[in-house]
Image (cartoon, rainbow, N blue to C red; front, side):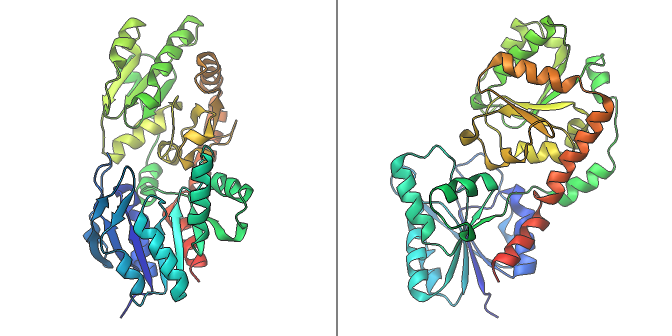
Amino acid sequence: MQAEICCIMNLAPLYNAPIYRLMDSELKCDFFIGDRINLPIKLMDYHELSGFKKTLKNLTLISKFYWQEDALRLVFKPYKKYIIIGEPYCISTWLILFFAIITGKKTFLWTHGWYGNETIIKRIIKKIFFELSTKVLLYGDYAKDLMIKEGFSPKKLIPIYNSLDYKDQRKIRENLSVTGIYQNYFKNHFPVLLYIGRIQRNKKLDLLIEAMSILFNRGVSCNLIIIGEEAEKTNLSMLVDKFKLGKFVWFYGSCYDENSLGELIYNANLCVVPGDVGLTVMHSFVYGTPIITHNNFAKHGPEFEAITEGITGAFFKEDSLYDLCDKISNWITISADKRENIRLECYNIINEKYNPYKQIKILKNTLV
């Protein structure tokens, strides 16, 4: 029996596997997924999906522009609806949108949409591109608000948010409790700051280490754990030595064991990302740990908007070392009762929005 919905993706990251599995089982989609592998992310096994039909070759044209081989012919197949990754750089997607209008088929672009830092030319191109689709599936309300200001109809814009492996993470969370993992490692009872993600220059972890030094000089003691692999040379260990913080910084390295990550995140007092933040927000919140990051929203991934100032985290003035220090100091000196209330608020935002069950519900309502 011919599926009604055709999904055309540029790739399928491993962290998106739960929502793709739900789409496979509940929407009965046919999947055509690109082979792009020049990004530092793990891909899911496409063959897990019963509706997986073919790997599409992504052919680079000029600069960031590319063509998905064999994608265009899918618009002439007997599908009624198309869910497509909404990248204006994909030339074949433009043609699919055009021919879908001619043939009376519905298209749903799944995309970041607007960031807020688009040039005039990008704004014009994006405006034309997204208007060609039936509806636009967005990662959040921030992009929707920006696009409404650009003249898009609110009815066209559907926030669908994002998700990780919520089902397994929630099972892990239910068995978590406060442990002595940090006291045992650091041999003290100081509050613990946490960073989790790839170690890159745009994360500005040097700012965090310098902030720790200033906090110590102010009499505000804390520890720091950095979880992740070094994707770029950052010389963070040299900076730690410079400020004599070796006893208070734990370079944990990469970790893919979710049980271990759950314990580490749950027991930390605060997650700090001085640079640009994205999926880390969901990972931290699902285990109840608030986040501090900078206030230049156009640079962040869409997940930043899950942070509510004063409730699930805070935003410091971008690149302001002293504002970062003040924000950290405020958050690691809260009472134990308030910390538990914050933990519940972090859980709530994931339970309400950032999970695959919420996403599949939105998809079903949108695709009617």
